[in-house]
Length: 272
Image (cartoon, rainbow, N blue to C red):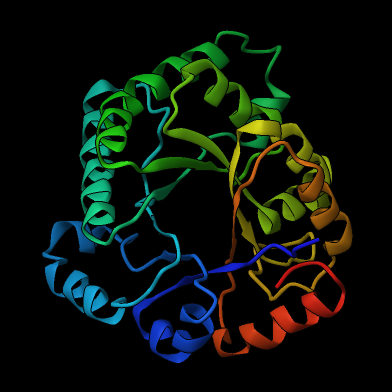
């Protein structure tokens, strides 16, 4: 069995540090410099040009983390959704310039929606309709440039909520993203299902995974092995999945230690 090849979420400075480790086996990368509002309000052309020079010779898949601060895809106000659409379309413009074929966006679901599912039964359809409207032009553009929008769990405590949205919108450029640390937090703090169930619930719709460890208390973004996530079970569940998601290590700091982290996973027969 060939172990899955892990990619990495990086910022520009990290690419210089990890260049050989990324380039030699053609690891996927997720560029995360373009999430802040000031980037979208300004001119990112210089940073894009710097990335293009640095990525010369990179053979792996690429993507970006799209903008997300204050951008609720289910916002009921059409005029505000129009602003969100502009931000996401700008994100796709950046992804295209960098040769990116995925863009991560954030889910709007929270524990409140689970607790109040029966109390406010109309909310689910209202959110779905707003999200479908918000994403409609974004998905059209994503299709034109060959980029898939990945809907990531943030405060989600129902693993199936994002899946239902992706199934309902039913667009080839929209897939589910799983952040393992966010799922572990939801499991530890809110009694949500464990990480492996988030993988299983996503099924064939799973297109992308952020691999990060946590302690079930906060959004740690630790290296795998430093928290409480049962990694052998997670990778076993991924192996059984109908999908072939991009697997991206998304750690908060000490990125220079990623090669050692992956060696430890490889020694366990989990990933390389």
